[in-house]
Image 1 (cartoon, rainbow, N blue to C red):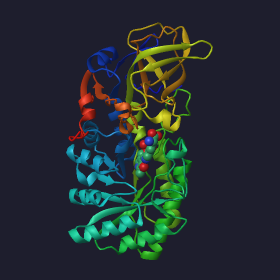
Image 2: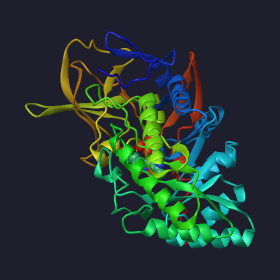
Image 3: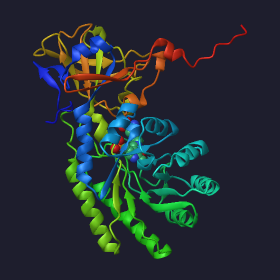
Length: 438
Ligand code: LLP
């Protein structure tokens, strides 16, 4: 069984006591709940694991869409990784964190002119061109600035993989990238190569997210290398970078199928790339990967306080917590399942009963976990911890029902750092403009 809690998590009698050497009840007391707790050792350890697995011939770009606040961008920089940003906001965060622009990749299926200008002016390492119209816009912008821009072309290899329909992106019917099978990829590469200020380094694909096995990646590598070989044959250009995106799965529940290890993932990808290149008589390009979830996910734990406990005899017991779909949209959006644990002091866990953990939003679908085995004596004021919330939790948070978004703390070696301030009620109001003529 794989525990989805960070390696520093300490349990006593089935209750979560501490994370990163910090007492969780003290965290809740000092910072309030809901609280995103990020385990520094788990987060940084995973960054190093990826960096070391892909080695000096590879590039690991952390996908900031999973979780990006200034402190995370700083840790990514300190670990020597590249960073994938997918919007002006993510790019701005990275630049404000002092992240070196040449290690940034800019993504997005509908980058605005302003986003492209911001990226070109900052000198980002790669713009990952996603569409024909963007190609035209970027080429014109680079020409007008007289500045050469490093680009990759995002292609859809016709393979979609992943844990949910909404997070499968590499198929032909996708809003992302140039389709290989429809011939759009090769046409776009030809155009990009002809643009005087675009420096075409290679190709990019992203198959989907929460993928447990390497098969889809291997199939994609074969197709991508074939495209690279056709580019060589047609244009006489040998592309030197292949970015296969992110997507490696993590464990959310102990019974989940364990994804391959990062070392194995790297070994299989490298072997597939070498074999495909030998087959096409191409030199092996630099292999680039963009893990988001597999780095940030397991490092995050959310702490909630139980409010209302409601027994409907013969039906079910609901325990409502002080957050919900505004701090973790994934259960409502994807039917995602998580692991819950009672935290801090409270009822003994040897007697359990199924409890449905609901959020506090005006929405019946605002349920974080169905029929979770929790202590029979679970009561108002108890703390609940939810594991593996580091990726796509805070990043997808909202102010639904005008709830202030939670704080985030970084814990490690017994120390706590506040890295995201809790929003106040006035923060929530701060962009409203009242009518002044009534
Ligand atoms: N690269 C690109 C171009 C991507 O679009 C993504 C994710 C990644 C890398 C990182 O993928 P990861 O390693 O995190 O699987 N909100 C959804 C996930 C959406 C993923 C979107 N793209 C969720 O909560 O499951």
